[in-house]
Image (tube, rainbow, N blue to C red; front, top):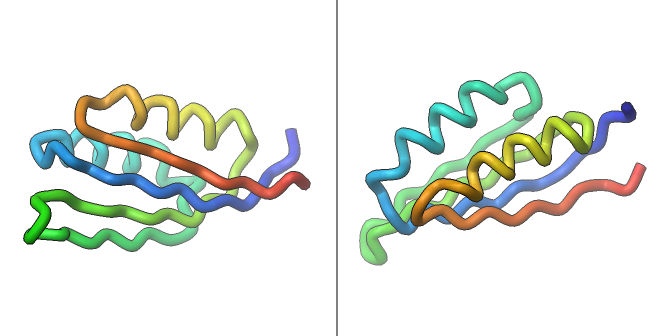
Length: 81
């Protein structure tokens, strides 16, 4: 399967879920090219943006696991080729 470049946005509204998010990101580290995490203390949430390079299946597997975590919202945009 062909690799694609993408952007993944993660908003963590339940900060108790942050360790689960980090575990999943660590597990999928081979497809993560870059990561920017910002704790937004005034709103009691965190925002993480990722640049990814992997197959559609690899990216979907990661975002699917993240999306199942309570208090975590995930959106992605991936190249068509």
